[in-house]
Image (tube, rainbow, N blue to C red):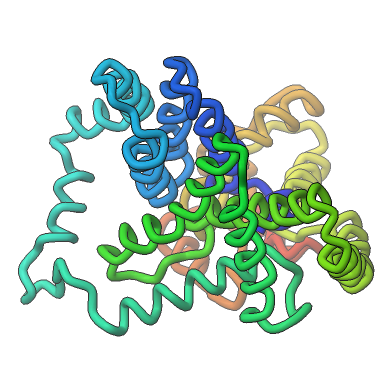
Length: 366
């Protein structure tokens, strides 16, 4: 999971940083200091900016952590806790208010809608089994693929952590590790209300918890001089490194050499440079087709790259010389409909398919 996050930018990936900050301040919040209580709830809520389905169970876990594990008794502490949640969610709440609570209303219908509409508050057996499978898949996503059966890995991570938690004398550490274990039932119970597949990136916080629990087990083993277990951990980690290092090197080499076609910025900039080079400094117009419909990435490249390099940006009129930059979507021919409806004017001078996979047409309009 975390190697995948390091390989490309996606909206869910930055959430890991704020999840870890929520964990960090939850640990510090065990001392019941106001600033740490506030920051732990704030960062748990703030995660909604990247993935709402991560933020809700994490926020519930933080709330239960302070009730049952830290055992806050001062009402002022709870006001501080809730202020962190409220401030974090406030932009989203204001957005909902401005738009008539469309999102919240839709979610309520999803949870409490009529059975005729396919909604049911209680989960079916199929949903429970599917969710359990998703949780196991997320667990396996923490480790390199196919290093050993998931049941054995599960025991290696959780059983020693549970044992050392039982023996733990440090009260603050004991409470924090208990919080890490609390995440699992809370996440599962919250997601029981989801009748859809749970994607592994919904469970990023659990991935972080698995790593922390494993690290806790290793550290506790060495601290207590458990020689047999120490030897096991050394051999296990050595096995993981030796088994996965060649694959990691290959991934790095592949990413470094991968041209990326239409998916990466290099392919996009090369396609735009090709059009500018063909125009030979003359003014032209440019129309872009992209399967997601929105062409913001290309607008950005034209502003950031092309304007700086060539000194001007294309027009958007079907007169004189104009080019079509077409991003195909695998084997789909959706761009054909775009050509037949949106782009109908002009005489085609030539059409070329670039090495990146982009299709470029040059046309002359009236």
